[in-house]
Length: 193
Image (cartoon, rainbow, N blue to C red; front, top):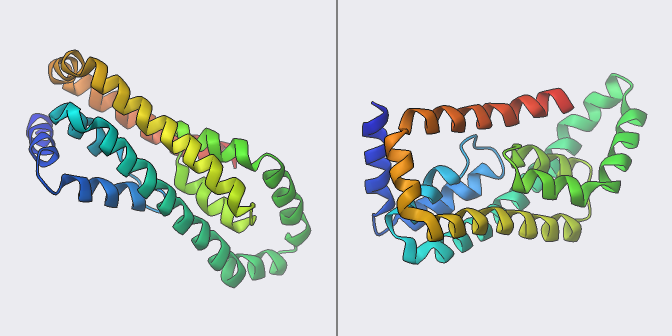
């Protein structure tokens, strides 16, 4: 089954409209979707290494735009739902202190989440909730997401055939490690909040 899924993903990666799917996944992952765009970026670059920089650019731009959508979700829904709930339970003052601390380190928090397997969507929404300066948020997002996606694309561009061979030989191991990283990011969110 894993092999069939891998083969299907590789075929999809070579499809002429695959970059649209990549952009869509990258956008929605930054605001609410749990699967990172690397799941498409990696096979797409492996399928056509000449387009590695284009794919990294698509991922970066759409991820930052999706991050802005996540920011808006946090900003708009917090005022409508979150703030009244905090007031009912008497946590308004504590939240104000949290927001101040978050915004003090906001650029670094956004950068960290944008580069690592930590779920970036959590930070985009939290940035909207705390109303982190939008310019700070955007610059940190562009730098972090650009670094992440261009690093992945660059490594695959330079070492694509051996990496593809490794993935194909050890598909089960790669899938397990990827799953652990994904769930590890979500566990880190739960642990840190």
